[in-house]
Length: 170
Image (cartoon, rainbow, N blue to C red; front, side, top):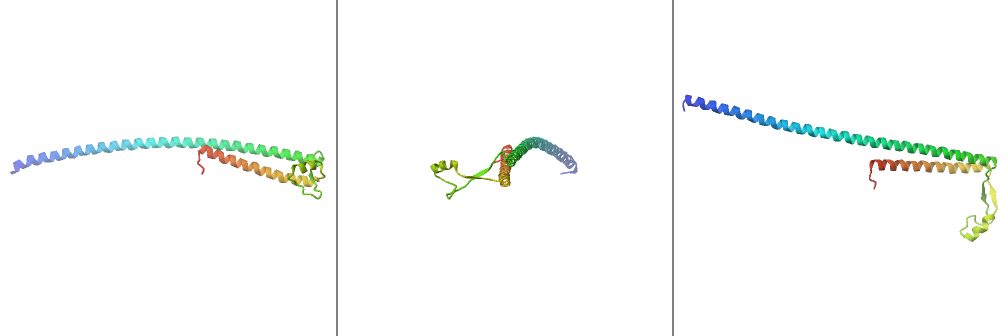
């Protein structure tokens, strides 16, 4: 091969290589642009799903918070009502309007299982409690009632949260 035949061949090969390289670059750039558009679409979809899930959870939290606040108000009302009733009862005991008594066993066990024997004890001897003892017994019963109301409120709060968030319990 002579230099005159070599140069046009080299020029054609060089132009072909440059054209191929350029076409390959364009093809790769188009592939990268497609991937970037797909990634942007997926990111936007994920962001939308995250925003919707966050809004749903916030709505559930607000609903649960409102239900718990309502339950707390209800408990406070129950406690206030119970305290008012206890105070009224204690005042009636102190004034003598209400008298408390317990059965007095006369040589027999006070607790009987036989219903005929229990019927005979309808008019049995009773001992009246003094006001301090009655107040002490009422305080013990009142504390127990308060604890029961509080535990029931806790159970209700637990059930509210469980039902709000659809928690599976085993």
